[in-house]
Image (cartoon, rainbow over all chains, first blue to last red; front, top):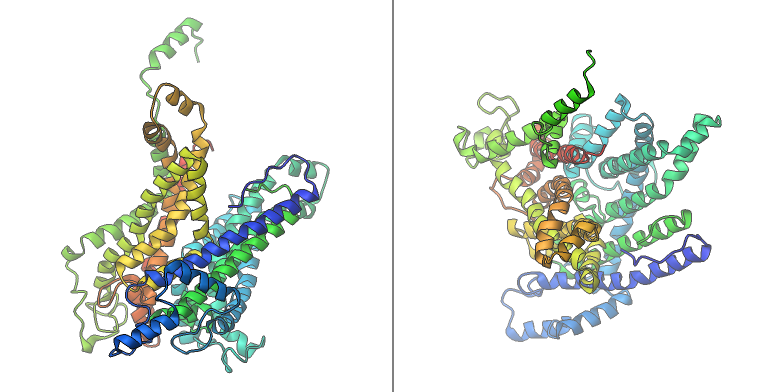
Length: 332
Length: 300
């Protein structure tokens, strides 16, 4: 949580700018701590991190040589410093399994995850906003109950299982959509046409379910709260048409709803591993999965670092956007 | 209605007063939740799943480990196998019931552990305040920089597969969330007059934390923790689904879903059954938690 700024009642532009500056500065210690956690991940692994590269009958000298080559023989803080320095220059080491640079592998995979997350965001946020507005407007009616049940089912469903069920319905039973993969040319030849989109559809719907539920609940609560405020009464009293009232509702709900959606986008980017595994979608989660099972520690470390940094910066963007839209927002 | 003299009504009211004992807060909450049909239905389903998991060996079920090559992947409704058989010919009904034992433990235990650790941390941070608060809360912030699924998988992946590792990783995921809630409610209660009064009358910090603060914050932290069980069930089974939890042939819903994935072209609906169990438990906990939250909000 950012340090709470002392703010007066005057909401001047400089206040907002000062807040944004503080928020950006606050990111620095977070980034370093995130890097530290990623660095330490490798050191909580049981056994020798060299196991994956060393042949089973390796001699003591070879082991020592490799240990020095990877820098594992130095004290931990020094290792962290060197690792961080190299990471700042975009060098996250080489994958043990493929020998290729980790950063290039991760960035290529992240591109596919971003494609998936954007498609899921379009579906999930549109559905969530619509359902939330309807449910909030017609509170305590059957429409509200239906939308709310839909939202609760969305946040409670094990999404990897939902992915399987969708595959069973649309691929196995109906044979309409492909079950796995990212299209004819793999991820390299991705295009936004039907040939490729049909591969994206099922994973995107599966990913969209949780954000849909959360956005529905948020927008419903916001709409209900705003509609029960006095100013809405006043708007209606002065004869404003319901569509006009609705415009006010949307304007007032937007900052909070945007913040929630920003956070959800971050979760979709970082939490895609289960869905990507179900659909063999060649994204960062799929990469993480193979890194875990091949005990490819540099790749594991690098993927988690990149995904966590995405999340940190997305949060930063959300906070800044929110401060810019609504200077009254309580910060701290 | 007959007009009674004023003194007579006053007398009656005075006599009646001691007879109606004021209902306590928790009794009121209990009464409110018992009237909530959805919560009671969820509680009943959960009770059924829990009891059958505990009593599994005495329910006269098939052996959940005994497979047979000649009766693999039978359909739902086959005579003798009401829910069919899995890819190794093991009875699905027995495996689903037995699977509840491990699945419920690895799903719920992390939340219980995180509840204990997070409440203590949040209580101390909120009550003591100052540098200790900053130290605890800023450390917590670091864990918030990771999406929870990623954090759970990162820790579990680094530690390696295993039930204990998956419980540890999920506990680490939930401790920061509970600590944050505990800290914020504690800070809210700390400056209230009755805490000041207790301090003035000589109560030590531990007594105040235990008696005056814990009693007032435990309810809201508890409700928050119950809302995490649903996520925890999904994540715990998810880790097993990825192969980071328990190992075959142990019946566990996430792992069963994983091994049955290969069978979706042969017998799709049997393959989907373990996930339906996770869904049922998860949604029941979610609805029950929602019901508890609104039952505890007695001002409305």
